[in-house]
Length: 424
Image 1: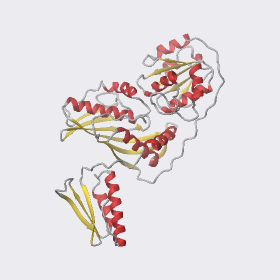
Image 2: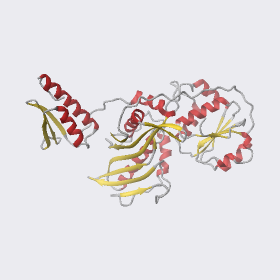
Image 3: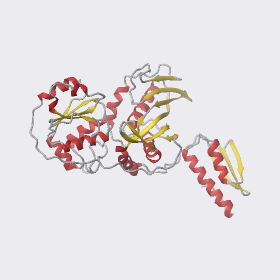
Image 4: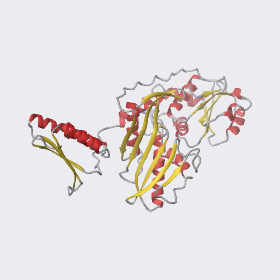
């Protein structure tokens, strides 16, 4: 199991989201500890469960570290309730890999006592471990090996800068998963294989102020509320327009409330508060949806205090990555929930009109009530028309670009065959 230490015949396992487990490892009496495991993601939760099945001598599982992380809540919910009738974690909190079935997990729940010690000093926990009752082993070891990560079919693409537009955090997350899985380059990071997309720019322009909370997230609304509490300590900028909150080692505000967050900048445009959030890195499966929801809410509350409406939230992600242990989960989420095409979104740039003008492909860009023509041009080759629009109008929404390609292809067929062209 990755990121485990102190593997011995002890009867206590320790898990949690902590940077340095030293206070537990180096206290007297470590012979009681079988292993110490990180628990910061769904992949690490599954690795922990496999390790417990393999170690029947473990009778106590101590959960410690950060009390705000959803992985810890998922573990507690699993021990309280087990998997539901559909094999999903309680909550809903998503699914585990198929080999971690209800029967195996119920065996763990019956034989291992789970102790919630989150938020307590690690030194205090270490002192308490020798006082736990010694219990005999009651089951046989069960070896479950993690399945090999599903291979990715990678589409050729540019190596950097990927714009994504959405009206909700949930849909933006699905688009990010699709992006990294399908074009992400592979690299080794901290001994693990990851798929990485560089410089993704995600713009979320919400259709309403209602919070999007889809059931395909691996955390519940209660998990999110606990997580958001760390943002409550951050004060919104006193002067909203152009105000920047800088985080990180050099930032005036010290440790960022979200992993990898470098800065949060706010500006006012047309009576709306816009947010720009720069992240140097983001685990797209585990961290990004949780942090994005928190930052969007933080922006919304800042707008309310300033008496403004909430505008778009822009996330600039220098390195968006997916650990190979999460590829199968990501494919599963996409297969069930990533349904395209979406309903047409009105592009603020305007609307296009296309026509066959005596064998030339003619196009106009008008405002939405057709009262003004912003641009008009005719091309002998419809393909040249489509390239021109894509090259000189990069501000168009992706859906609009797709529509342009569709209509230019129809124009090309009409001109070549002499058929009547009717705009779709």
